[in-house]
Image (cartoon, rainbow, N blue to C red; front, side):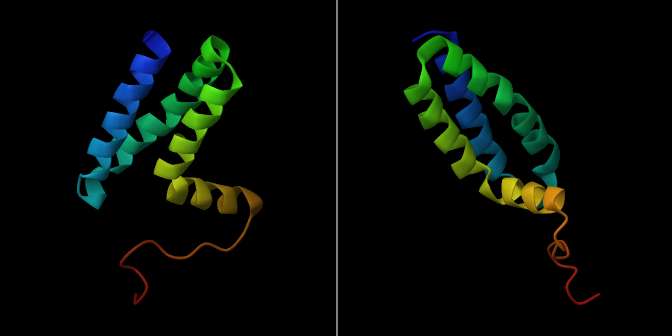
Length: 89
């Protein structure tokens, strides 16, 4: 295995570890992982081609489906639901 795939494996383990944290402690590690993902995906695509890139992209979207859904809706200007636990305030 070469460096992009090793780093992708470490990224996936870090994302899994972040998901195990309490919700209030997931923000900063999750943002760091979200920021690193595009660079890692491009690196995988350049080193290995389109099929490994699509597999890595599917894993990324699977792990970050909720934040990506939120950011997409926010960029499109849709009304957003209040954060967890603030529905009754």
